[in-house]
Image (tube, rainbow, N blue to C red; front, side):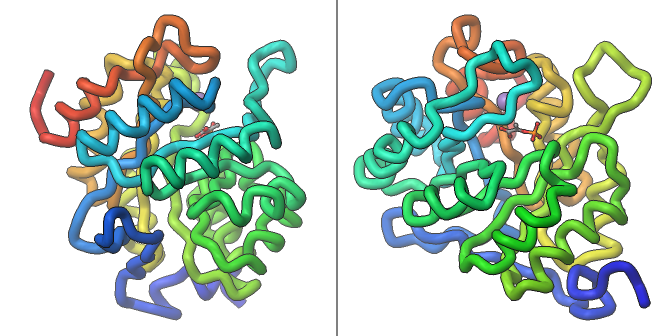
Length: 268
Ligand code: PEP
Ligand code: MN
């Protein structure tokens, strides 16, 4: 038997379009005719800055906000996110902005804790092969953005998606976020060919994350254009009002105005 089936074009030839909620009465779909822009800080640092940034991004046309409270950090000494203390912030972001919220979860109990306060779960690169977590969110009725493991093949990504689909949750969005190569100038290497390759193999929507892929704010705009040109259904970008004082991933964060220029398709 093929290692994955439900994720494949053999099972379903037509592109999957995933409704992730609505903003101000307008339905938001991933995988449809419109490219989606998901933006926000690496992690929520405090309620006020998150709220101000979210409102600004909404004004610039962003409908899905990165509302990260559980942060998998490479170093144990780095800022680890607000953790469950961030739940009230998610509540406040939802009621004050009406945006669609995206939250990463690293364990089943975090998915349960965030369930009522987020619209989309994210499973990050470090957990793509956490099969118990995949099965757990597969049993929950909520869209999942599944990021490619930094050392995983396309087939392994599709098998990870299969774990979620096989539990009944059909709303899986795949994310190419860069893989480890010998290149050190960039943090990872954005595998642009993965976008059309996954599209050949799977009906699931595909987005790219140029921020974590490159680790460099200067490369975010060109990689965003490249991803969309290659057929990605959307782009996820880290944005901070003051990247230089961001508590995490400041070197890859762009300012809200720069994101607006990307959305407008301008070069800058
Ligand atoms: C993130 O998007 O917040 C993140 C940690 O990304 P990745 O898992 O791709 O490193
Ligand atoms: Mn980050």
